[in-house]
Length: 397
Image (cartoon, rainbow, N blue to C red):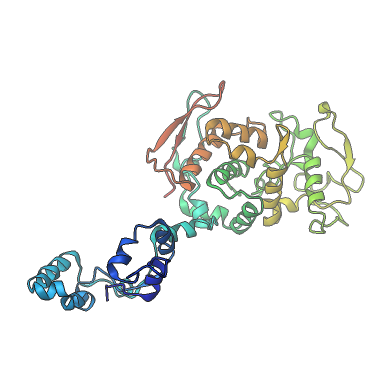
């Protein structure tokens, strides 16, 4: 019935003082319902009782009141109560709804569910903004046409991330990228670093820097890192970064290479051999050359989903900045274009895709956080001299 006359509940509610008279009586129990300690107990109780909205069971649930003295003294009270309950009830409720008679405090239950933090492939797809690219001058705005080039559907987004979704979640947990702010920063950078998770064979492969390290006048540093071009979700670049990640995974997970190395740019002339030497960084900055062999094949940073994600997580938390390490420290500052810009600089120098990274982060933070904003766009002002960017919040469909 609906009287909630449970001995278990009474024990939780009653005054803890055993000498208190009438502490199990209804009036005394009712007076304690506002007690903070009682409420703390009750909000985590699961109780079994029938639906209060079912018109067919009103008499079964509330008929007991007719035996109470106030109702015996006023025979007209029950018909009035019954009419009132009829007005609040519904006929023909779904059977599954009526059978769901175990109840818990909804806010408490949702609070527990929110602790999960695991994002399914479908949920990761919802972190994709509908429009992925922005204009290159003035106040940056989203490019929407043609949609086949500049937009993405939810199905396409889910297909792009599905092969890495489990490992991406494992890595975010491993490196404490678990708050809404940290995930928004991290996934926005990943979105840009993976070229929006695009895989366009044969020359533009997912998790590989496009061009496989071929020289480009637009980025002359390529001539020094060549075969150690960007791979993985954070585009691990330079032989020194590959070496540091290998040292970190020195438990045998990244085995020394006993044969040749995968060569995707010049298959007939491998750039990595048993004797080849490679720059650890920019020679102008005092970098040196080392022999890479017999270390692991850097190609497995791209081809193995866990390595692709884990290398990015390792880079994220091991990055040196401001006398510290760990980009999470920057993510924990107030979420703003300034913090997004700083993270972008730490990940990729701050130039490549700067405005997309700003827009992606703003979009993802709204999706992952408790933001109640509903505006379809918002103008962001990154630190001067950067231009404004009008972030678009349309979701994929």
